Length: 257
Image (cartoon, rainbow, N blue to C red; front, side, top):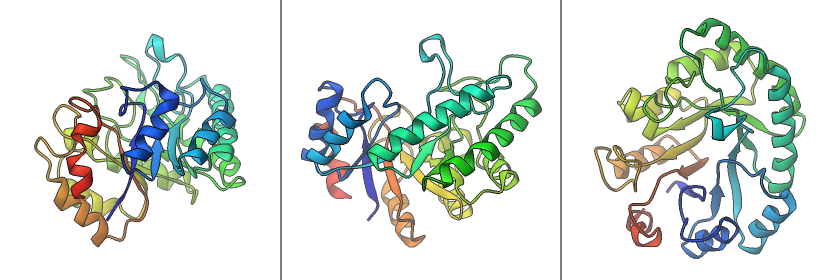
């Protein structure tokens, strides 16, 4: 059976953020992930993890000014120094929280932007920061994201991500395979999972369409969970979805899995 991590940026929002750790543990989760930890001291978050016997699975690098629409720095020309500082900041947090994977958010391509320049920036940034992460036992992961949820996001397809990972050539730069995003952009989820399992370090799930619980919509997650087991995937599966209603009431799928 896959090991599931509750995404407490989206789930358990009936509680204030710091109380979501306890709520996730009470619901039966062994791990959590979230978007960004930087609003809180790392030690305070680590205390919540320890108190609730939870593992931290993942969080993202600082994305720039989120409120103004920025969605990452890794592939943004001219912001290389900011990205490196964001990676170092994330590594400091990961040392405290105990997670090995950090999602390096690529960022947006403006209308008329040079996609080749953005790709070159992403490759160069990952090459430069991968050794910093490796020295601390961490893996930087990149995630293809659909253009419906984040229009203009640079990285959208699994093959695009593989090409970048192979060009970077670092063992600790890998793929974050989000089945929700892949279903919207490419479909054929089981085949994509099999084709990219060699570079997948983290998975995420949500129902499609709607980004709600994975027991509704067009995707057969029961089959896909079995496929994860058949492939021998032993990483985390992040539940990055927005509950239709109260979080615990929608966890029937989790109890069955």
